[in-house]
Length: 218
Image (cartoon, rainbow, N blue to C red):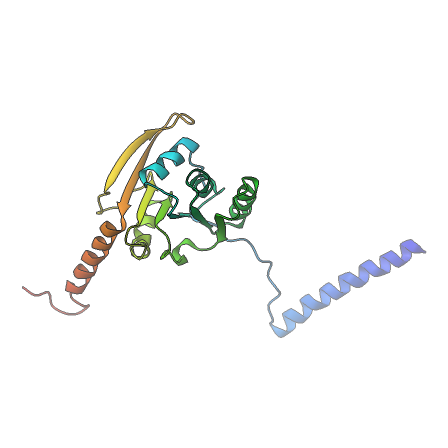
């Protein structure tokens, strides 16, 4: 008897689900789609701990800084900044798996008062409070970020791991050999003033370009 009732209940659920699908087909309504987590465009490759240390050193981080890591992964850079220098730090990543992992790592180090992890598109981040920004993205992404980075604190610094900026020489560049992976890692430093000059020059070039259909002055 119990088995008979369970069979009736199962077929009832199938009929309800089938009716919903049929109604959607008849009315043309779309069935609800399952939400999927955002897929990051850049693969997360952890930066060796000794390279992280050199990145923070290159940026001359102090307790008064606010360090942002765009594409923070497991949160190791912001954790290291807060732990070593006692500064505030913000990690941003679009991948919910990475932000969840980073939050757990922050909690494990007891740094919740200093470190914030946000799931956000790095191209939409407000960087005006940042004094230091860390990057490990790509040259193309670095270039897209320049206008936003130029709006940082005037005394701000930007450090990129491996990837430079085409046409924008760094204020300083160093090579670091990691004891962890035995590889050489290139690090680049730009001041916000250098990036603002680049934005200003680009605006001047764009202003001088003729509009579509107009003649180029001779």
